[in-house]
Image (cartoon, rainbow, N blue to C red; front, side):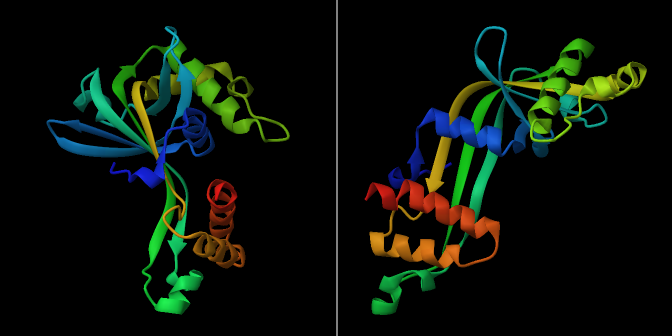
Length: 214
């Protein structure tokens, strides 16, 4: 990922925060069959050795675990808030006309080595952790233990676990940092006036990470 200096995000807490808040990821791998992309939720965890890892699972019917060898390199992409930015939000556009559209976004790329796990206990534990993570906002969180044990035991063989030992994390926060403060303020005003949470979320991010630092 090409990251201009103005947009480079190196705060590891923020990068990991995006992974946790937007866990539905694109897993990109390569094998003798070529490039492949799978879309799966991933859980940021620690391995038994204390290193950061991503955990997830795929259906056993998915040939990925047979095509990609263990310890192959993998890329996982997480996308945070993003939206179109119209030149009409820039006060300088109305003065000079010199402006073009763009797209603001947050993206995190995780590189690592992939392993496929078939042990039932590991898969059961991983699915339990993944479920607890996404059920915590529910009034009555669902748990794997809510389902009959024999039902779960029958389901587990249909799943293959994924562990990606992380080697690097990089991120891009493209939030109008390359614009003068008046244009940043104009973008915040324009996006805040829209009904979509997508635009309003971006307005809050620009306010937090750009205007407040000027």
